[in-house]
Length: 538
Image (cartoon, rainbow, N blue to C red; front, side, top):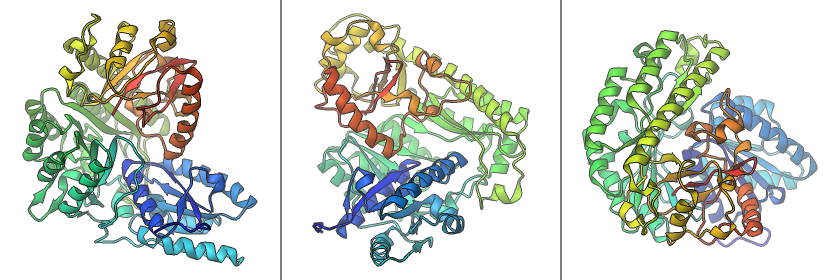
C-alpha cells in the first residue's frame, strides 16, 4: 500500500535475540502494507514500538530504563507507545498495571493485529482519551505465512523456520512467551530464501528455538537446510540454535558434505554437571554431550563450536561447576556465551527450585569460566594461524581464491604479531575492499589488529568498545590487548545502537578518508583510546 501524506510515522527499537530481529522485520512489513511509514528518528515518530526480550533479568532492566526515557518523551508531545515481544507476553499484567505510558501490548503471536491496535490508539489519542489495546493470546498455528519480512539491505537474511518450543527446560521462559512448537511450510521457507537471493542477500541464517526439531511431513531440518543451501545466489547458510538431545546423524552429514553450509555449530551446553542438567530438564548428560561433539568432530574435523553456559543455577555446587570447567577444557570451544542464572517468572525452576546461589558466587564463576574460555580461544586461534598460509608474513600473490571456505566457522584471529601492512594490502587486493595505505602511519594506529574471517566477502567493522557492559573483572584496556570474545555481546548490538552508529561512522569515514564506504553495507565502529580493532565479517 502506498503511504498517505499524513501516514503515521513509526520507529521500532529491537532488544534481544536474532528471532526478535526477524520479528521486527515482519512487523515492519505488516505495518507498511497498511500504510504506516517508518522513520529512523524516534523524535519524529508518532508511534514508538519496543520489541522486547525476556530471557534474562538484565534484559528486563534495560527495557524498563528505556521505558523511563519514553515516559519523558511522551510528556512533551503526543506519542503512542507499544511494547511487543516476549516481555510483553510474560509480564503482561505487570506492564499493564505499572506502566501507564504503554498504549499497546502485543505478544509474538499477535502481530497481525498491530495495524488495528495502533490505528485505534492513534484515533483515541486524537480524540483526547486513553485507548489501550492488548493482544496477548498464544497461538498453536501462527507462523506468519504469506508475509515477506521487510529487511534492511545487507549480506545476511534471517529466515524463521519454526516458532515456539516444546522442550520446557526448567530455566527457560520461551514456551510461555512463544508457545508450542510449529514448523513452517518448507516451500514457504524456500520461497523466502529465493526472494532474499533475488534481493542481493548472499547468506541465510535459519532461525528457531530448536531448529533440529523442525518437521513438516517428510521434511526434517537436514533436508530443509540442504534445500536452502541449493538456492541459486546463496553462498552461505547458517542456523541457530539446535538442541544437543536430538541432533541427528543426517544433520551432521549434510553440514559436512554441503560446501555452502558453514562449518560452525552453536551447541548449547548450559552445564557440565549431570545433576544440574537433570534439574534443568535438558534431556542429556555430560557424557552424551561429549559423545555428540566427538561425532561432529569426526565428520567435520575443522568445525568451529560455540556454546551457551549458565553459571549458578539452583543449588549448583563447586563440584557441579568444576564439571562444567572440565567439559570446556575437553571440548575446546571456539567461543562461549557465559551468563549468570537469572530466575524467570512462570518457569518450572521459579516454581520448584529456590534461586539459592549467591550473586557474588555466580559472578565469580562467570569470571572463572571466561578466563578459561579466553585461554582456550587463544590456543585455538594460534593453531589456526599456524595451519593457514594466509597468515604467513611473506608478501605474495593474492590468496583469496585459494581460501574460499576460510573462516566459515566464525573464528577470531588476533594479528597483532603479524605484519600489519601485509594484511592491509591483502584486504586491498580483495575486490570488495579498499584501504588507503598512505594514511597508515604506524602500528599504533591499528593496535591491536584482529581479523575475523568468515568466507571471502570481507567487512571491516569498528564499534565503540565502551558502549558495552564489560565482563566482571575486565577493563577496556585489558580487552584491547586480549581476544575480543563473543561473550561481550559484540555480535548482537541493538538496532538502536546500530542506527546511531551508522550515522556516526559515515562522518568518521568521510573525515579520515581511511576506508572507502562504497562496499561496506554493515559497518560498525569498535574503538578504545583511539586504538582500533579491525575485524572482518560476513
